[in-house]
Image (tube, rainbow, N blue to C red; front, top):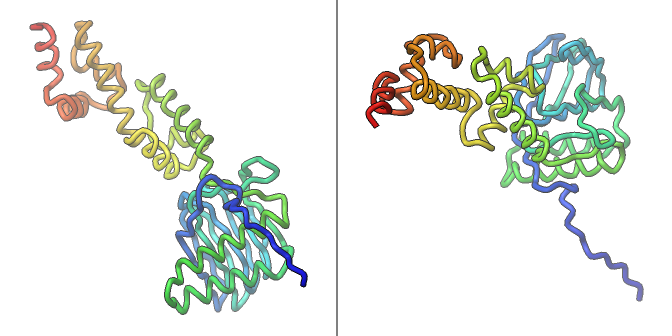
Length: 277
């Protein structure tokens, strides 16, 4: 008698934490059309089941046809898909806690496989679509498992690697944003400013920063400005209007409102209390 035995090693896609399928979009067109999709802060796997068209993202215009697979990382803006044939079917899978890497580098532009290496990809995606449409018992779990199989085959057949959430990268990005806020708090700073400085999608930026510092970047900025205003109130004779301008608030009234919300005192009340002590 012959026996073949193998002890399973739990590699979990070589990732530190499990990824999560959070969104399935079935895009069916029976006439030529174009739709815009929001830039949600999760990785996207886009597969053309049938038909042809073009994916538009920033300055990229990517022709697609049946069998095309497109990978997009979370730090993306909105994109659009133009279907130029009757009967076009496109599946978009949104996957949380996942980054795609190509030869160990996070790619910025969409990564395109004109044809998948095997029919397994089409099979797994068809199964996900079938489960979503029939919604049998535990269908979401089944869809998640098919997605994991899809990612395993992708890593096995190509130079693409999958990593979970890039915690180290995300943590470093957030530290850099915090440092920028500490150094430039007096400037006119918006989420668009921080997105441009960091190169991160602003929705993903807010999510990552809030997760690390338990407050949004703008909340942290306001707290930093209030802390700096306390020093000026304690150690200078600048007027409230002058201090408001020095620390970057758009108006004296907004500064006073923010200060009282944090300290339960107006700036003048705080200054008087410090002098009394």
